[in-house]
Image (cartoon, rainbow, N blue to C red):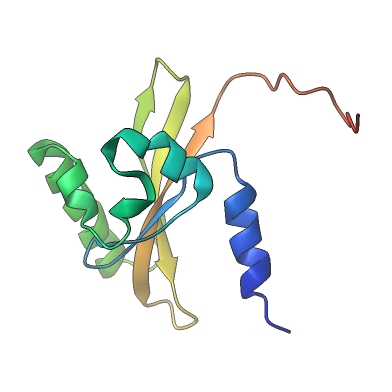
Length: 124
């Protein structure tokens, strides 16, 4: 069974932006929420470009340090990077590894802290 369509659908349905990069910092995938969130910077046209070009010099160095850590320690797979007060969310960098625990890339994970406003089990 090909699981890839299922995994892609999970990411595509996420309301949070998901930007996936390879180990060279090239953006290889953006889910629809990311394309919308970063639309003023090019949206999905950013795929194929360096994520480092989207950040300040200080942030670029931080990203490189995290990826170096991911490369050197296969037991370190998530790093908390900052809290966005305005949006009440925490942001993490998460390592992506193959079946042999080799680093193949990383992505940015957003976790919002606001209480859900959707009604429970609202099917209407």
